[in-house]
Length: 390
Image 1 (tube, rainbow, N blue to C red):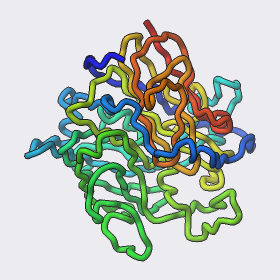
Image 2: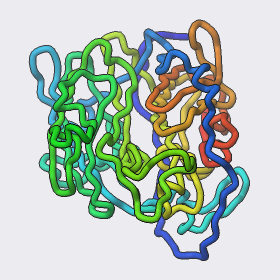
Image 3: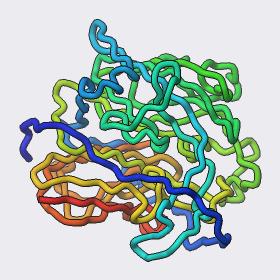
């Protein structure tokens, strides 16, 4: 693989939300939840960085004036203070905007695939106005949340406000891979219910501060880690042996409160295309507004609805892949392969809260599929288009 730096940019992701329409209701349950216990053995080492010398590229944070203003980049000794204004918003969300699965031609009325979702969104200072999406933070439509980018030595400061006007649940933000104090952890524990930043009620705000250290280089998830909750009408689980009377752990994350942190250092190479891909399952038992379980990529399900990623031959491509939830998944790209532990592969396993960083030079034009290779999950919506050109 050529390790010379290339001019850097990121992918364009096609996601849209047409107006929802009311149609007849019918329930579909054509797949079961998959435990995939054997995936734990395959995963063994947890998170994986595919190319040690080429972990994650940092997009040019000086190229976008809106980003600079909103993030409030402040130079300081040893690094930069990167300041974000993030809000947890509630919004009606359709997992299948087109209403059709391109692979099977199955049609889904909007009321079968729609629910009230939650998402982190980036705003200007003091939550003044919603930021437009760009190559730095991503689409900023809420699912996934904005991408946080930083370099070793930087500090990430997040001013978080809970604007969950629909469920009115408490929420928080919990970051993986960074260094912070207990007051910046965001994880709720009932015994310590008054712990700062763990159960922020609607209308309230809290500021988190995380430090980027050398061991932070890579791709990491962040997500809601607040008090467990239940939506009225939900059964809470498909396993009757589980006690969920006190609520569902990390329900906020299942509803859409998650995102990716991209950390780089001086050794990180630049890429031409960078794709963010989040594997998250949403379950009818937990979200009764849905007609069935869905397996989603970036908050969408089924071919023609999930993100379409594009690249050109000769470009260096990087996939940042993250999973949350209860299932193990297999990331697979048709027509492509990459180095992993000194050998080439085209499929890698990841479990809940783990990540993959995959990089290669594009060499194969065509319209390809990327998908989860657990069959039930592909049948449940984890499949998308990857289009490459000469």
